[in-house]
Amino acid sequence: MDGEIHAEELRDLIDADADVRIVDIRSPGAFAQGHIPGSENIPFAELPQRVEALDGANRVVTVCPIGQSSIQAARLIGSYEGANGATVESLAGGIDGWEYGFEADDGGSDDTDEGPANEGPEAPF
Image (cartoon, rainbow, N blue to C red; front, side, top):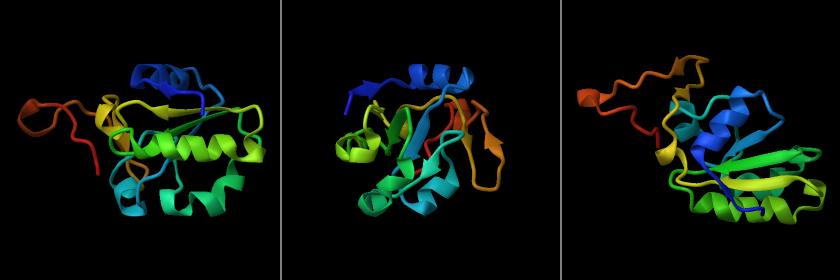
């Protein structure tokens, strides 16, 4: 694992169309409710069996609700021999710290900043 990345840095990578794989380790149900645009869902419990799907990635960012489980996921991915040379980071603050809009499984995007009582978007857990 190469440390943590902050939401603003990840957003800049996405905006720059950088070669980054965003791995959301939440349950499929939570992922379907909303996720960081362009991310893929590999639930934490399935990660050991599916880590080879990340072979050849140059940069991997793991995502969870608050940024704790994703640290463990990043360590697991970083220790995998197929991740040789890849930069593997955890999103600091997790989905809870992501303020840049979410994408739902239906392909729609919820990038509004207007949540209940105009408090901003709610994190989909």
